[in-house]
Length: 111
Image 1 (cartoon, helix red, strand yellow):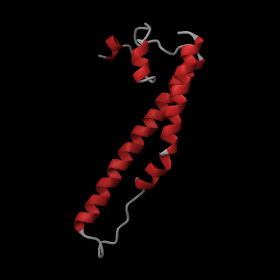
Image 2 (tube, helix red, strand yellow; image 1 turned 120 degrees about the vertical axis):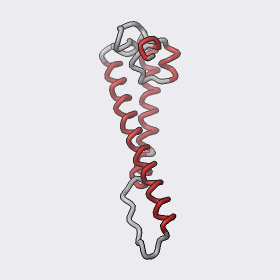
Image 3 (cartoon, one colour; image 1 turned 45 degrees about the vertical axis):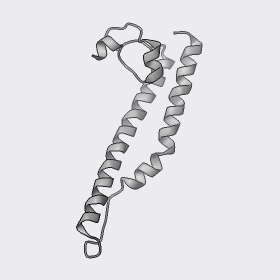
Image 4 (cartoon, helix red, strand yellow; image 1 turned 135 degrees about the horizontal axis):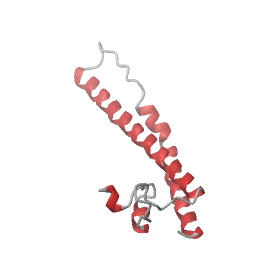
């Protein structure tokens, strides 16, 4: 992979990272502990609030994992290891990387 392609993938990864970071405060707020006054709030409202919180926590977990994958991909770019399968060492198809620049494996090893 040449320098121009690496820089394009770096820009794509940094844009993904920024997008995740831009929405992190909203995710943190929604996933905060739910405290409802049980004397004023109905059972269904409490269940709905708890379900919303659980969904937000799962989203926060996915976002944190995605940030780690993005950081790892940037490190691989810095060390000229980006675009190679972690399993077999063969180049990963650039079209696969365009869809998910954090891909660690070629299509064969990913299956």
